[in-house]
Length: 276
Length: 210
Image (cartoon, rainbow over all chains, first blue to last red; front, side, top):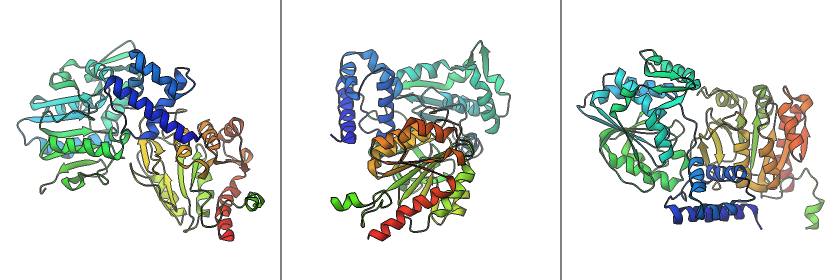
């Protein structure tokens, strides 16, 4: 019995069970990370092998919720990669200022750190009042955290550093109130943010966007799924709209490569091309 | 088959078929020096892909790849998502991401939580590479102050790959090589100065048997 084939078979069965029972389709996730997460769950739950997960998935929704949580845990922070946020502030906002209304979509917003980072920058640049931010994720647990806007107080030092490095104009402490171990972001930042469940794998375009931000989400998908999602972004964007990806992601190998210009490449800021 | 059994440990290549396709190297504290001893050994036609995880801060410069590129005849670079792993190339995991290899021999990344406090983590690369290359993989653990890589090296062994560890007495920090040696069956424990030569030797033996 070949170990690798067995692993592949067991993971396939697990993913089929999840799709059948709950309608979530993980079959086009990049396998290496997915397998790692699955094997971690096997270990954490004290199981002997992946196959033992299948009856639990089929008959215990709580176990599935655990799995769903496993699939969503990533490292994220406010103003992660400050140089990217600085570039957005310096060269994307100047373009957005020419519109009377601006729609921004954070696709796969996870626990919301980048959404609030964007809101803070928009506020400082006088853009927030005319902007509607849509922050979506397929995981309701993550969305709940995002909508609360409460993060561990211990992270504020890092967030503050990032904020300053991204060209922040005020004191970051103006944007949160710390109580015990928690820091709650200013309520007014939320006024222009709508949090909603949207599954990139199966849901459709829901509004015309001036900017789509989707960083470090596509890295978890295989080539086919990446293409599907990128096409969705292309459909969502207005003429000359912006698309911002993670700094290790690119459109180079994708089907939408010809539809976008590299606007600021080290930061992976793309713009819908003029001629398509 | 008898013929095969007679071939000594040194003949890692048989005819035109490569016995190994890739080398994964994990290194932490003291890594810059260790890598600068090994990387210059690989000549232009070295037929394996070499993938390196060096622990470092999330500083977003590609200093390490640039530095090693100057020392090597092979092209040294940070890969991007979905890029194919090519022979005769050296790849360095970028800061702030886990680097993985998919079954179709393409790179992928994750921003999963750190493993052994590290992102990129050696275990993450080694375990995905073990599943991808199985017995065609060589795993190398060098100097470091962390146990990252021990589990990964064990997985490489389980999937039939070759395990190599820097002789701890030649390591700037011996914690990582010692942890690896205690955790799994190591095929070769080699002093730093001879690791490059050893890996190159595998290539020379291929020529001999062609």
